[in-house]
Structures are given as structure tokens and as C-alpha cells.
Length: 105
Length: 260
Image (cartoon, rainbow over all chains, first blue to last red; front, side, top):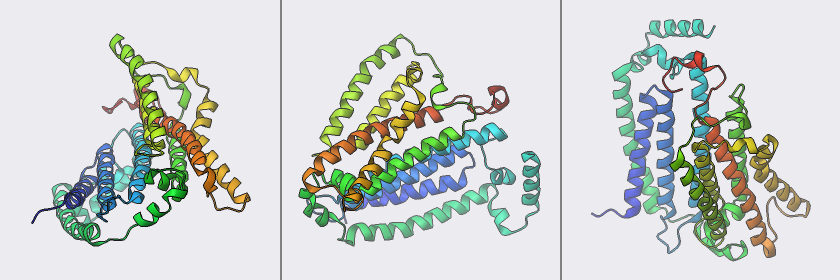
């Protein structure tokens, strides 16, 4: 059985998404968490790329592609906000972890 | 004050004897998460595989059918700026919101009063002088190309922002030449323009952002132009806002970490 390009992209997206999810939960450092969310977002974009090709027509579905373009800018904006929040937490408390994480380690 | 609250929280965590407390600690947390992620991956793989391989739906036929009346030849641009233009309007709104939130978290530093953190050397300065005009030219090309091929406001805006980031990293304080109100106005321009034009169409009996078919191409190009400028300025402002600089308190009180 040979996998098509779309199938490889789909499976890669799922694996990358779950790696990001693992990083989000397992790492305590806020910047690691933000990076993990970004990795999950990239996996969703990759999945949308393969969804756009699912019809196997001569033309890709433009709607998922447009959503990826919109999503990238939103992801950058959310990342910038999250980084500023993390820096503010560091400025206020001197640590780079959330109180819940600190309580357990 | 917050310290006592944290200590109370820590004490509460220590006395918490539920299984969840054990799960949250150290290695067992990692193992549990890894197993959970692996299970989730296999479930998601089946679902996503089914969607991509077996679902033959989608909006491709509708998009291609109405492409002629959209005013542009590139279907992605048609979706972004015509068929689903409300998405794009709200997306530039999200960018405005993010810029506002980022700078609301700064206590003293405002957008235009933050100097560069480093001084560029000779090579970096010369390279900046060479690259920035090329990036602006490339942004203009991508904007024009978006009407008939992959490209458009988002890609052009990203190039604009990249030009600004290079200027910033080269140590030039470009912000001192820009009035604060002007930069804020430029960032909010696309959101305001799209809202205004959308309401204008509504007063003429059309739907929100439903262009007249005869002039759709012109309207789309105008909105793409302002969206490019706003996205570029917004992304650039986000970079400045998240770039390491004194945030709120003097550095001496925040210097117990390693990342300032």
C-alpha cells in the first residue's frame, strides 16, 4: 500500500499536533508552552493544506487555504500577546511558571 | 501579597491527596500525558484520514462557479476578500486587539517610546539599506500578484513587517520619526475601512461587504492595499511590543531571571 501525498500530510499533522499537546501539558516553562501551542497550530495549518486537496480535482479547495492564511496572522497575534503575558508574569513574580506548576514541583 | 497566596496554594497542593495531585507531579505527569497524546493521535489519525480521503464535499465547485463575478482571478483571494470577507475583517480586528493588549501590558513604555535594544554595526546597517527597499518592492509585487495568482494582502503585509523588523534589529530608531497617533491610525486603518465600506454597502441595500459585481476588483484591490499596510504595521508593532525591553518595572527588580 502506498500512501498519497495528502495521506502523509494528514498523518504528519496528527502526529505533530499530539507532540505539541504533549509539550503543552508536560512542560512547565511558559515559553515552552507557547511554543507547543504554536506547534499545534502549525499542525492544524498542515491538516488544512491536505483538506484543501481532498477533492482530487484540478483545483484545490480555496476555502481551507484562505483559512490558513487568516489563521497564520491570528496565530502570530496570539503568540505575541502570550509572550507579553509571560514576560509580565516574569516581571511580577520572578518565575516563568504558572502558580499551579510551581505548586507541584 | 501574591507570595502569600502562592504559599497558600502550594500548601493546598501538598495536602491534596486526590489521584490528580499524583498525576500532576513530575514523571508520572509526563508518562500519563505521553500515553494520552498517543491514544489521541491514533483516534485523530483515523478521523482526519477519513475526512481527507473519503469526504468529497467542500466548497470548490461553488467557489469556482462564482469566481468570474468575484472581481479577481485567484480563488484564494476571492474567498479572502469577497466570499468570506467578514473573516478577513475580523482577522484584522484580532490584530488590532492583539496590539492593544500587548501594549496595555506595558506600564510605561508606549509604542513609540521604546528604543532599539542594540546598535547595529557597519555590515548590518549596509545590509539593511540594501534589503529594506527590496522587501518593500517585493511586498508591492505580492500585493499586485494576489489578484491572479497566489499572493495578496497577508503575504505583502508580512514582507512589510519583515522590513520593519530588519530596520529595528539594525539599531535604527525608526519610531522616533513616527507620530504615535499616526502609527495607531495606520494599524486600525484596515479594520475601520472595511467596517465603513461594509456599512456603506448596507445603506445601499446590499449585504455587509457585498461589492457591486462590476467594480468588485477595484474595491478588493483598495481593501487589500489598506489591509497590507495595517497588517504590516500591526505585525511590526507586535514585534516591538514583545521584543525584550524593560517591561513595567525597572530592570533591577526583574533581573533575577535569565531572559531579560
